[in-house]
Length: 356
Image (cartoon, rainbow, N blue to C red; front, side):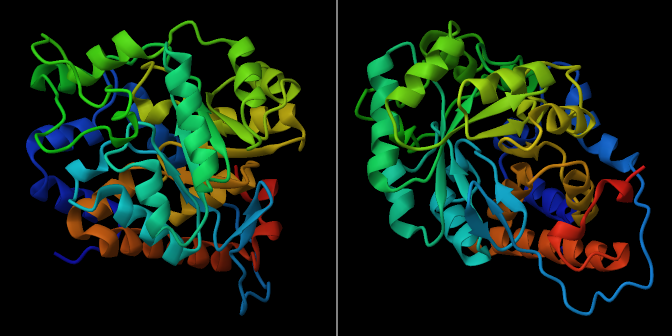
């Protein structure tokens, strides 16, 4: 099969992955309305391109939190990547570095904070779930800072795990031989067995802290010198509160449609959040990005960059590090072409009037 776009990579990945693993990566919460809407909302946005603009030279580079990256496409935190390929997060980090962009490592990764940093050639951020045991949470943050990660990304849309019915049906468990490497020292690296539900759901229910509130954001900022971003915001008032609390960035996200079904598509709420934040911090967006045209639409609506998750997993499943590299190259190439056809020679020339 000629893999010429992200959809081709997903089809190829589905053939290679065990059915349970594919269902874990691909599925969303309840009826998966938000999962589908995340991308379909991009399809309803039209691009009003400019003509007779010199686009013979194009610059895709930008900066996020002051970090220069080669393109406004970053890698979102995705758990359990070694289910997709034996090299898992190590392959993804290597591909991100080669592409000149940032990878965000999941708390519940199958490679440790330190292992991933050893192979990284680019900047890494660390995504944080807050555990009921604050000692465990503090240890994760301290390890990330000591290892050289550049930011902490606090996930705020998961006080409880969303109901992912595919995982319920499959009684989803971590495959034998894999574990949550970052939680090994705390002996929290395995899902509970003998549960009549998803093992991940049971794990999160017993260990993640549903009392997480604004006061905990203040606590988190007090224990690290790293900039803190919040991921999972879909309301302007929450974004404004986060800025007032001192965050360094906002990630507009609905967890890839995996938390609250019928939550709005992220691209639809992005403009109001950007307006409310008013340039005080960088605003990023994830969810549903599958084409270079999606990237240009997100930037036109005010995002500094987009994050991709599932497309990275599809590349990983198909061909490890090379597969992830190819996915990033495809999206970069599509963005480059879309910019040229829109009359944009650089990221800074992508403006609000391009979208309708």
